[in-house]
Each structure stands twice: as C-alpha cells, then as structure tokens.
Image (cartoon, rainbow, N blue to C red; front, side, top):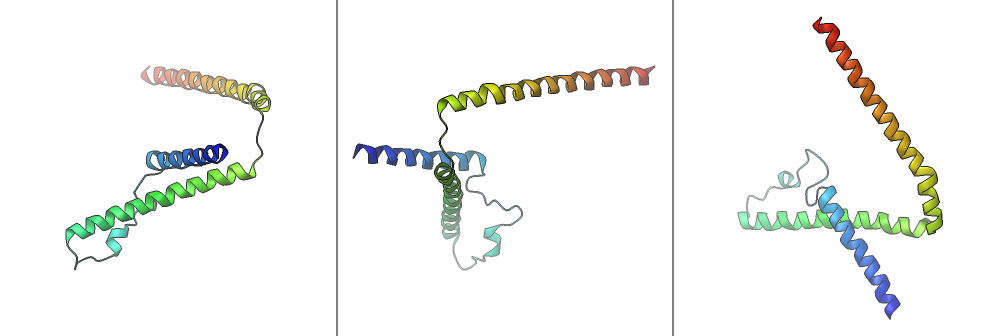
Length: 129
C-alpha cells in the first residue's frame, strides 16, 4: 500500500507541475491560436450576460486542463520511453560535456561583445571626425 501511495504522489506531482507550467508559461486559460476567438464565433444573443460569463469561465478551465494534460502526456511518455540515467553517468555528462560547452559559449559571447563594442566605438570615432 505504501508503494501505491508513492506512485500516486509521483503522478500527482507531475499533474501539479504541468498545471503550473501551463499557467505560467503556456498562456493558462487563453486560447493558443492567435486572432481566433471562440467567443466571437458563437452568437449568444438570446442569453443573459451572466450565462456568457459562466460559459467563458468553463471554456477557460477546459482550455487549461487540455494544455496541462498535453504536457502531462508528454512528461509521462518521456518517462516511460527513455531509460533512466544513473547519477555517475549524469555527473560524467555534466562535467565532460556540458561544462566545456558552457565555457565555450561564455568565451564566444564575451569575444563577440568585445568586438562589437570596439567596432562600434571605432565607427563612432571615425564618423565624428
């Protein structure tokens, strides 16, 4: 029974995390397709404004749940299909692969920034003369 609660807590953590990602990064209850409004396509002239607000809230909740379940599906499928990585393999990847790439990126970005500002300073000096 403890093992079942462990798995239940793990999947509940995935669900809450996918809801947070949906709300914070994926637009939450807003529709994802720009310039397409669901509310303008339906004509609710025969209903009062209170019903329209309730329907728009329900549609927003449905959109949020669809986005979060999509993210949850991607997370679960990734967990089921990819093999687990041991901690020594992860440390080896970080120290031998990601650290040199990060340092190279830092060096490249710094050199581009220095070159850009020196060339910009040189161009402004020659134009002002």
